[in-house]
Length: 532
Image 1 (cartoon, rainbow, N blue to C red):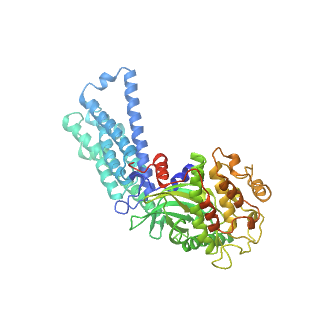
Image 2: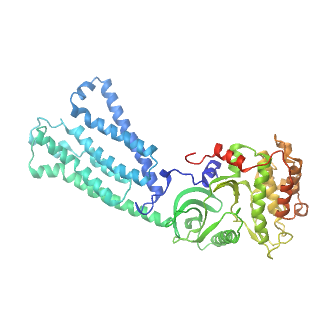
Image 3: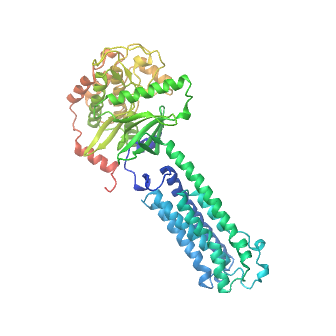
């Protein structure tokens, strides 16, 4: 997953323009409304470009004074240009909801529909005999194309679309009626007027309204497909091996959430793979639900959607994963690494006591958060590879039989997992945590190999270097030794439990301690909250 995308995955600091509009304003999905807002920016910008080019071309040809000799020659175009500028700025910089922006867009649709025929027709029929003002001469105004195009590009509630379409559809007949009354166009028989200037736009209104209803219906289908239990999907914020992660909100509560799901169209419901995915997904949800450590991501809900997608709902975190942090800001100070590792140990200690090993501890699965008044609060994610040990309440020394393929991430894989050994316990997570510590302290992996296979082999055979060898920081010797102890090939040579590792980390005395004030200062500098 792209680190910059992951950086946004766990943040709730989104502007109001990126939030859901809720059920009270539209049944369209928020993603479709945001697309409509983006299209309004493009449409208004294109309109500005067309007007600017028209005036530039007129100026180069020396016809500009003739084009602007009376107010009626320039006022409609100036109004069209001003409306397009206003629409572009509202759609670009507004912090209002996408639904509100599309409502403003409907007003823009009507304004454009009236300014176009006025600027085109005002002097076009002056002095023309009535018998020559025929449908073949006039044709159909670009307003008809504008109405249909706008309906497709900017979907909205059908009743609102119908009001805007009716108003837009009257633009040409009203303009011609005003021209006839002002003597700028010849009078026509009623039936001729209707067939030339009313029927084409009435038909356009009808076709556009049907299109609006079809698009709205499809949008509602998408929204229903995106409903997971009591939650509504808002934004796709990441993809991974287990599927997709979405930002979501509860339909009745204001609580934000993150939903992890495997969509129905990614597997065959009758296949063996589907059964494996279902079992793995349920295992992750159930494993996470059992854990109570504040440093383990909280699970809110779990289920299967109407379309067969598997999902579970987690708390939405305000922070960034450690992999993104290292890639973006480089190695972390040793005292901060100690602070992080102790919190991870708290999560793992409970999991191990409940006979669960994580098997995929890595920086991307550890998120550093702001929570209430706390900073640098750790959350451990993704127990999708978790395995139950045979007996409860025993943190280490227990075995399980795992005949499946090697599971985990090569850069953080314990040797016993890489070798496919049957005896795997919580100390495999401690090995991975040692790899995490090395990554945080140095910005490098323990073994920098060219391929995943070579990296796995190195974990089983090569002697790990101390972090201080690759760090420009002054790493305490005790921390250096403790990381190497976690990286021991034999589980028996590692800390026996996560609690033992936490005690060892607590005993390390660095030159400076990582305090709440230092953490808060870092977040203010690198990830300021909205409004300060």
